[in-house]
Length: 185
Image (cartoon, rainbow, N blue to C red; front, side, top):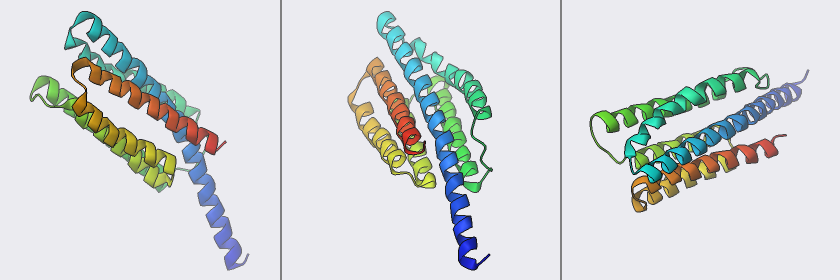
């Protein structure tokens, strides 16, 4: 095998691995987007109808619902060798989850803060970083729109109406997943 043939084979293998990671990521964007949409809309509806913001405690159900579903979905993922990129993406989303849960707990139990603004910014940032790692412009653009657009909306919308921002964010995650799915059939 010549040097050029070896380089072509390595490049092709890396591209196939990246495409497999993108196809698997698409399913997870759709899953987490759906969980986010349903949960945020449910909390908004309950808060709006009762006038009681205590329904926000239901946010702590998101990892309880989402992680088991993600594990089931991961078992069905296309076989792709574990790579540094897939590990980094896992670390980015694990860090996002840790930050979101920690900031939410701090906001609820210790120091009141503008939690919607913080969560939507780090959610958009996590999506953007995933897009950069995967070299995928639709993911980068949707993450930027979610983070920056969500921050602006979080400052403009008041009380329970901010929950609809997460519903729209979930929709944006679903759209991102569908775009990636159709890009890499």
